[in-house]
Image 1 (spheres, rainbow, N blue to C red):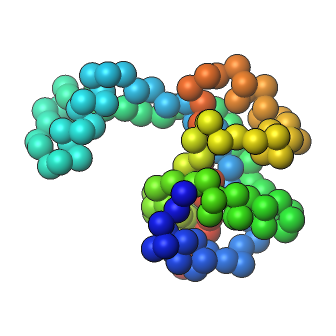
Image 2: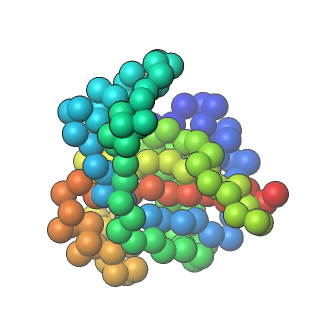
Length: 138
């Protein structure tokens, strides 16, 4: 669930003409998780340790442009999303991305994934997760 501050930030992204939905396979081991914890508290890591941090592998992406789907994904994001943050930019937009934990994927989201030919990829990759990115014009 998003915090009030994150909801306010998300509201700055609206109305939007698109949302990016991405499937990512997260590569996290016990060792990489421990390294990330050390990094997050400000501990300096060696180059070798930095290479061992968790990472994600891109599995698929779709640009959602239908207004009803955007409205539904936005409401779903407020209720279920977590960790809204600015992760990337384009020449035209700054994108605010949030994460949808796999355990919260419902029937309607599965139908949306199926519509965009992402459901099989999602279901055959047990460590796949969903990110949603909301644009703000520069």
